[in-house]
Length: 259
Image 1 (tube, rainbow, N blue to C red):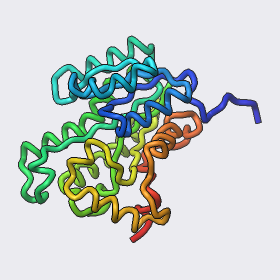
Image 2: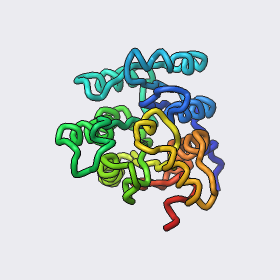
Image 3: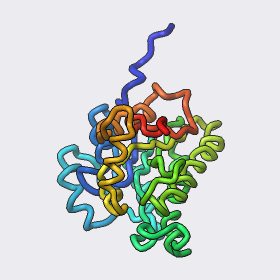
């Protein structure tokens, strides 16, 4: 075999990570590890309010931070344009944003409003397709696109409600994007962590109960950590995963495998 560079490294890679909110964000875990592994990054937070919580995290790393609300016309385009100009190209993109109106999230799926369902789908699902369309021209050498999902996309999880169908759509979209972008050397995956107390998750009713049930069900008998989610994400962004695409990959202590 010919000698190769370290395929488990992100050294020299250029990445864009969306969805930093605070130190508990999955996006922050991914940012920390990608930076440690040598990647050059542009990261985003929602708005100026979120920036106050995020800047103390990103400033010591000298990571470029940009505000981006995907519901606002032009902001996603501006983010990608800034990242492409700042980095020169993109090798990986991590989409870690999800949202639904609380009145729709806390109710039954059959009671969800048309507007609330549409907004949840726009922010949590379709924005990944929009992001990919904008990023692909800057990924001429191929690379990875990741989004975050949850077991509630595959199973009906109590209290997950509206986000279940939305995440199911996201996982399906990942497969179609993998089919469409594979010939360009671009790999697409959904990472499915077990429940972890992020800002987005805190909006789900009875989330403490959901986490407790996950501990009981998981073969590992514990919750996963931000570091473990970031490690899987980093693997999918580095060259070691070059033969993989179109998958939903779980990092949930084995919950998905147990009836």
